[in-house]
Length: 465
Image (cartoon, rainbow, N blue to C red; front, side, top):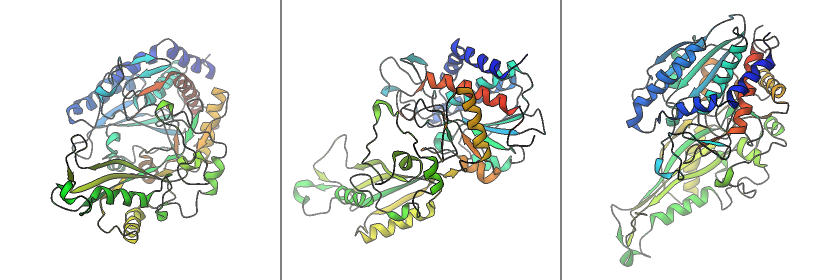
């Protein structure tokens, strides 16, 4: 007799016996970085050779489509329609990664080879995002081995341009809206609030980028003859940046921030929410950021400003000259409580008022839109209850994760509630060297999703029954 407990036991046995590790190792070995044109063929290989056969064994009908935007990776659409009157879940993942950065990894590690060390699986994509969508599919496989009829319907979108901002995804979803109709999106990406705290996020912060440029002359001039006489663009830019954000990270362009502060519903769900687990690479400074907010409110309910790159002159080979220009590439991470259309105009007003008319704003625009589903939505509550039943402990719900994902595409075009169930943590190194997946949370994840897939075939789901 097939049982929920039997399905979860199968998932754990597959994990404990090394089956999942081997599956993930094969996926990591495909260097499917979308940020290097030399690896473009690997994006097709990831979908066509690694994912299509696996999904077809699970009973999916699979189609791989060219990206609507030329020059970007293909998109896989799969569906497993079993019970038209039952709920339909749309799952999402991405098979592309950031660059390997091979030379920056610790000795003995490589981006395209899975290595196990100290409770971690190292390799590019282990956390972002191969390991996460592979865990969900491996859990589904265990459930189907226990009970061949799942009792619900599944659809899956796997893209290969997420690490370039998901170009073409919105056009693809719009063109296939009828095929992608569902009751809820349940996917996995990003970090838990803490490595040992199961988490559900109901959206993501958006990203807005811009350059600040101070260009004062056509070339550098002798620092001895002109230093102290002619303006230094690096000094001007540094003061302009200091006018935007103070010494302790408080944003001074107040029009960038949610007008009413952290919304009451967001503050309520974040009460007691832990934040941390960033590993050795970063530590929380309680004095950094907006005064009066908790760490959870700062990262999940507020906006942040970061200087991603700053350049003047030739740092690798300085010369005795006052540089002709200085440039900073900046980013705002924002929640749905702020309209990103205000960012550039508000910054221009601010710079002019602070007497920086020579500082230009260039290349301003949204890279990813913010999104949020009400944390009290029935599908969120149902997913949390399913996971808690499997794991035997509470699940932390947050209004949006700290990073960015294209959830807005699915809310705007398909009207779906968002349920993100992350399997990683903030110290995983996902956009740098030494990316890794923690083994213990991954084992929890495969069990949690086995229980979730099982429960979707039972009575009591929020969708049609």
